[in-house]
Amino acid sequence: MMHIESEARSVIRKFIEQNMSAFKDADELGDSDNIFEKGFVTSIFAVRLLDFIENKFDVQVPDEDITLVNFCSVDRMIALIGRIRSAANV
Image 1 (tube, rainbow, N blue to C red):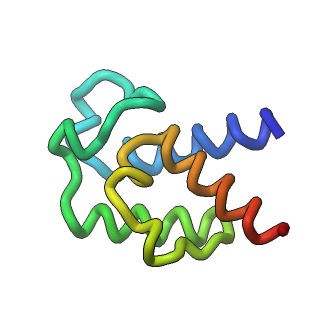
Image 2: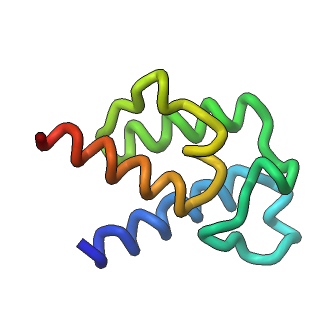
């Protein structure tokens, strides 16, 4: 499980860094960095990020889970994916 989580973190971080021009000149994105607080996220990017998470990790994010808190950092996105997958396996 740890290896899969590590890969997922890397994939999400890479997507954010490749799709947010602000990170091209900034320090590397940390897993706990709040991308909204840094002021780099547009509404269009937020929608693209949701679509990426759902497609890449084969999950359907429930409407009630589409919140800034769940998408503010790589750590939070990994936790969200884990909760959705756990709920699907119940």
